[in-house]
Image (cartoon, rainbow, N blue to C red; front, top):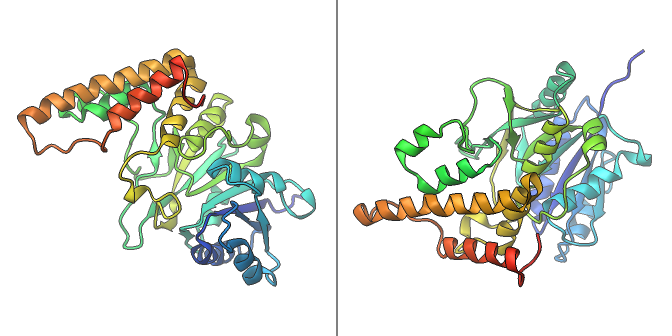
Amino acid sequence: MSRDPTVLTVILNWRTAEMTLKSADAAERAMEGIAGGIVVVDNDSGDGSFERMSEALRDRPRFRVVQSGRNGGFGAGNNVGIKLGLPGGVRPDYVYILNSDAFPAPDAIRLLLDYLEAHPKVGFAGSYIHGPDGEVHVTCFRFPSAASEFEGAARSGPISRLLAGRSVTIGVPEVSGPVDWLAGASMMMRDQVLQTVGVFDETFFLYFEETDLCRRAAEAGWPTHFVRESRVEHIGSVSTGMKTWKRVPGYWFDSRWHYFRKSGGTGRAVGATLAHLAGAMILQARRLVQPKIPGGPPHFLRDLTGHALRQLFGGGRKA
């Protein structure tokens, strides 16, 4: 007699205790009728978040609240919960990671679970993500490459049309099906795959960690699928502050370099950087003729070049 599949939901908090509790409430509703549990990991917030969440969730049997002990970033924090497993250390059939500023619809988790149960050769499945006012969030992507770096930096119509099949962003598919990788705001992962390819690479502090994990799974024969019917509301960038960046932080460059080097060696990282700079030169030339074309983030090209040189010739963090 077959048993019901189990799901471990992991929610990572960093200094957003009240919002995380709202996410936990939504996750609990969406886990109704599903065997498993929910673990909330405080990523060493140091602001009373752990105590606040422990108190709020202590009488709710679905939940465990744990402390990571260090802020190692998104992947490291989620790994704490993933490795913890279900109560008693039992491994779940599936791990579902949910951002602390994301709120699944009542059937969102069930739809991901049913999809993976119906598609036994699919490794990971992610939701349709939308904002509080219903606007669609683009969360489905192709794996980055030198061609995508060139296309993304050039932002030129003819180049984008020529490299349409290489652009990282693929929009929002109309139907459920395969994508290269998904943003990790709402993603269910087959535990069998995690036991085979490993969990998140903790070298990534933030960004590219989902890309890397989906790439490793794909190389092991486990594709990632987008599940259009599973809907999750997401505010976005609450913990990272990305929307208010005045300058791209160093850890983003570290993660980008590590991804390209890990997936193809130092030569690939260099090639991707040179491709980006070549595309940026085309954009700069266009802006001389059309000054209203927006440029990139302040100091981005200088920071990108400086980071690459430090990686190659020393003096910088070895990502």
